Length: 323
Image (cartoon, rainbow, N blue to C red; front, side):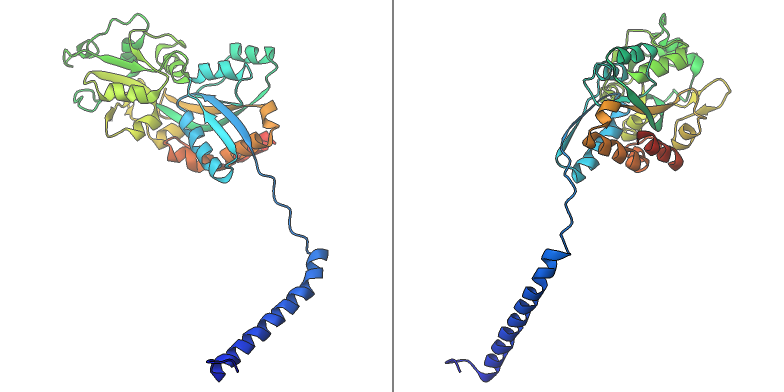
């Protein structure tokens, strides 16, 4: 017996020693089996690379949200998301400079031709629905609604409207300050066609920006402000803005919401949102994985950023489309 150790402690030490010996024996017995039949599973290859997306400032927040979640599972993949507007994005996409174009309208014939000339093949994927929000300053107490005819009167190319009193009798003799998307924006294209009857037909004396946050800041900081942009930007800033119901001529003024955007009754300013993906880029595993992740997570993330997701069967169709 070791000096200073009790019988009880000595007994426990012996049990522990015997136990270690048994475990070591088991380990030796199992070792050949591990080397033989039970081979460790091969690790899935880790994705890496850079994915370039650009285009619509309306669709951009969806793509950014998807990229953020995708990055958590795939830290080796870098996803860049630009917001040069739908048209500006298509210029890059049809030149082969980007993998994905975010678009708040369908591709135009001229853009299709540019893609053909560069041999850029692509897949069109509708990923959500949106309504264009018409907003005024939060302190505006007199604008209860606007008709499509009044919007046209304000925004048409030869409009001379400068004050609210010129829009509707009884409104104050206050100057209107206009804010809207730039000419490369798909929102600009959609709004001008829906309201003025012709794409890109618009007055030019307004504050224009492809960045909707700039428009939010303009309207919220100007008492005479009036602007339009994607519904999600209103939702994100509704404490700073007043949403204007729109009467399309049937006498029923509707403010956009998830329900009337989804069923199309918010007329004429409901619209589909798209991403366009290069077929060549889709052959790269990181791009294929990203687009698959995009479609699978769109129902949740589209809603989170303030847009309207499609019905689930539609997303299943998109998954089939990219295979």
